[in-house]
Image (tube, rainbow, N blue to C red; front, side, top):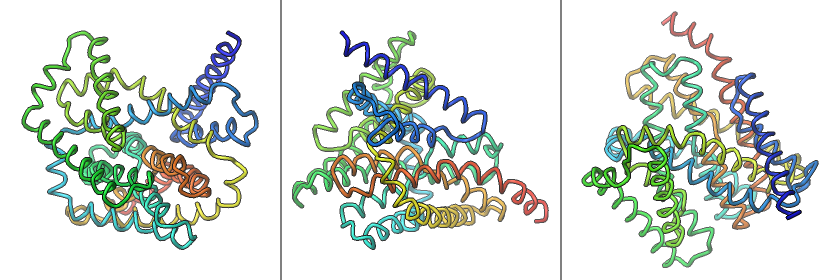
Length: 386
C-alpha cells in the first residue's frame, strides 16, 4: 500500500509538472517537447531528484505514448493519399532522404560508433517532427500558402519511409542474422502492402466494424485495435509503432476525424510521458561533453532541410519566398527522432547516442519554431520585393 501511495505521488507530480511546463511553453510560444525532455533529465539517472518507484510505470506509459502518437499520425492520412504522395513527390522525397539521413550516418561512422549506430543516427537526423511543423504552419498563418502542400507531401513521404525503416532498424538492433533480418523486413513490407491494399479496397468494411455513434465505444474500438495490431507487429519483430501507424491509415473520412478528436487528449498525455521517459534514461552529465557535437549536427541538419524544402518547392513552381518557408518548416525534430534514439539506446547501440540525440532534438525542437518566427519578416520582405 505504501509503495502504491508513492507511485501515485510521483506520477501525479510528474503529470502536474508537465502541465505547468506545457502552460509555460504556450505562453512563450515554443514547442513543449524540449521542456518535457529537460524534466526527464532532471528526474532521471544523475538528475536532481531521481524517481524511486514510478519509473517502471512511466516506461509502460511511454510505450503507449509511442503507439498513440503513430496511430493519430496515421489517422491524418488515408491509403489513397499515401499512394498519390509517393507517386507525385518521390523525387523530392528521395532528395530529402539523401540530404538528411546521410549526415547522421556519416557522423556516427566518423566518431567510430559502428554501422548499427550509423543506421540509427540516419533516422534521427532524417525525420521532421510532423506535430511541431503543423503547429508552426498554423501559428504563423502559413496553412493557406502555396508551399504548404509541398511540405505536407514531404511529411507523408517521411512517414511512409519510416514505416519501412523502423522494421529494418528493429531487425538490425536485435542482432538478427542476415536471413532472419531479411525475413523480418520482408514481413514488414508485406504487412505495409497488405494494409494499404486492404485500406484501398476494403476500407469500408474496417470502418463499418469500428464505427459507432457512441464516443466511448468508438474510442475503445480504435485503441483496442491499435494495441492489438501493435502487439502482433511486435511479435513478428516489426515495430509496434508501425503497426499502430498502419491502423490509422486504414481509417479515413469522418471516422478518422472523430477518432482523432477523441484520442487527442489521451495522445497528448502519454506522448508527454514518453518524452519524459526518454529524458529519464539519459544522464545529464553525459550531455555536456557531447553538446558541441549535437550543435554541429543540428547546424548541418538545418542547412540540409532548407535545401530539401527549397528543392521540393522549386519543383512545384513556387516563388523564392516559398522556398525559404518550406525549408524552415521542415527544421523541427521531435517525435520520430526520439522514438528511433530510444530503440537504439534500449538495444545498447552506443553509450553516446542517447545524449547526442537528446541534445540534438532539444536544439531543433526549440530553435525550429523560433527560427520560423525570426525570419518571417525577412521572408515577407523578399516576397514583396519579388
